[in-house]
Amino acid sequence: MSVATERPGTRRTREPGTPPRPLVVLASIALAAGTGAAVWLLPSRAHGEWAVAGQAGPSATSSGPVSRPTATPSPTPAVVRPSGFVAFVDAARGPRFNLSREVRRGHVRWFTLGHLTAGQKGCVPRWGGLGARVGDPLADRLAPLRAAGGNAGIAFGGPEGRELAAACSDPARLTAAYRRAIGVFGATYIDFEVSAPGDDAVVLRRARAIAALQREAAREGRSLTVSFTLPITRAGLSPGDQEMLRATRSAGAEIAAVNLLAPLGTAPVTESRLRPIASAVRAAHPQIARSLGESTAWRRIALTPVLARSGDLTRLEARRLAAFSSRNHLAWLSARGAALSPGIARFLIGATR
Image (cartoon, rainbow, N blue to C red; front, side, top):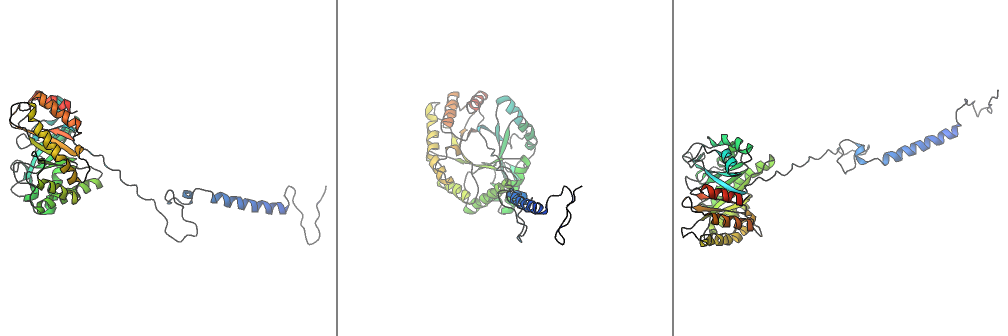
């Protein structure tokens, strides 16, 4: 048996199978170097679970605060706005109007429910200023309407009663009144039918309330589409209405559309009855664009002929109105005043789908 001997005072016996010590030392050094290189090459997020993606994590010797993940911004809520043909429902005169039945019968998808104006207490909205409080009983009909594929917005102002912004001088109570009506109906769309702009205080009070409600909706992941319904003449919008739109936008409110009320003339039923309406809309277009700070505003214009009698609008005129709307990419068509005859309503609805 061979026995390894060591020189006196310098070497000890090495166990069988044990590598020489110089090899062990070299291997240890190589292992340490390789481990350090591997750690250096790891992705930065492996340095700590709180590292923000794309940034290096804190080093072991760092004395600064640990980076925490940034909050993911809320997605922009989808805008829900009227389109096609929008039927108007007078809630003061027809509080039990069956909305979902109309969807099934005539393929109407959008309704505007109006008009909410101030009651005797000033800051409490009522239908037509005199009827029941907001929500009774039309609010109960909205779930079946939406289940049938339809939707509805609410209109403040109008020809009867006093506008809320004029009657309610307390800004907080005015905003609360709008907010309650929106909540009762789950509305994503509200309209303000303004027959007279009112003084500067009324315009600013209304505008600030709208802006506050739109900010609230955005924070909650909802959209709140706002339109103004305004009368036009052959010269377009009045200077007061143009200034009201500018002031409302300057206060931070976003106006999605301006709905133009255009009386249908009582002249004999010829094509010329629609020409004044087309001229008035064309005159209003640059005015609306300037007021809303846009270079073009066709998609922000809606058109609502006002009928004096049922049957005023013929099938040919309905076809031409629909063609005018489609050609100019208007936001939607509607009708006010006397009810459309059933045949004309179905034709106009089908032409604007």
